[in-house]
Length: 205
Image (cartoon, rainbow, N blue to C red; front, side, top):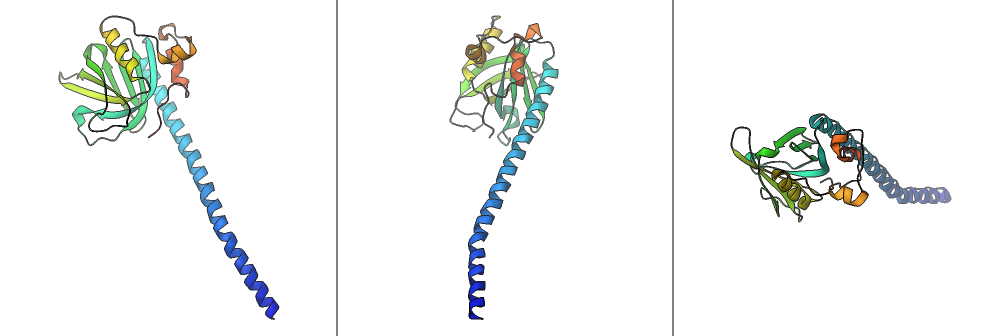
């Protein structure tokens, strides 16, 4: 009888020691599943944005496309949520497609007033340089937007060159990989970047 009780107590202690291990394992599995689902969701949003941007760009000459983090629009004030998206520069202007909420912005080249690299925008910063574009709205007012991009210096130089009627400098991607050709001769290979997830990605914040 005493032996039976001792055996039961021993088994009970054994289970108590195993329970924390089981809990940790369940939590880890749950985290892995959540990470997989989040990555799938982000990839789905990005692919949707790629297709929408392709349609918006159409047959325009595309110079460069980069993943970006949108810091907001000056006219909408400080209470804005940052969001990831795609930023494209074409011979007509700047195309921006945000993942969530699903927003689209086009700034014609002739409406671009000035471009610069800033340390912050609307009181927000990430310890990295931010691309700031000041422009005229369709209503004739002044506005500005800020983006965190992998190569803000290139965007400044490219926009200034296009505003002066010159060709933009070689893109960072072309400098790394050489020119890339596609079926669209007007794109100079840059539309291929819309399908590349390894070009110049910005961390998902």
